[in-house]
Image (tube, rainbow, N blue to C red; front, side, top):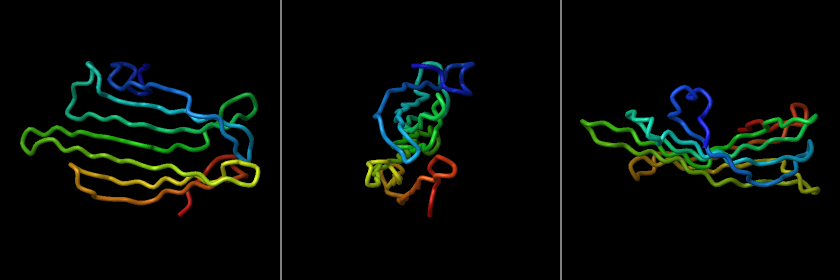
Length: 141
């Protein structure tokens, strides 16, 4: 576990990072990393709690890792309100991929739903297409 970005001072947001899988993009080889992020720690203590699973893909480029697409797989937020009660919002996504004839991932598709206190309040699809000029995925509508 490591303290996350902007919250390194108080350590209230923590991340656990794990390797997901090796992949290929039209721009070359890459790697997927899963970030499990949460402020559910003894130092948090605020009115809201969240947990998120973020999938980030990186392209190996010029002896470096270039981020090429970020997809949230699950995000759970609990907002505490003494007057109206707790509200739990859950975003869940199923991630699918399209590949070219060489097995390179060319499109990432995220079909998601949003539930608030158990009730479906939204759903949709996010699509990301490989952009050779930018050497990364861009959202398409």
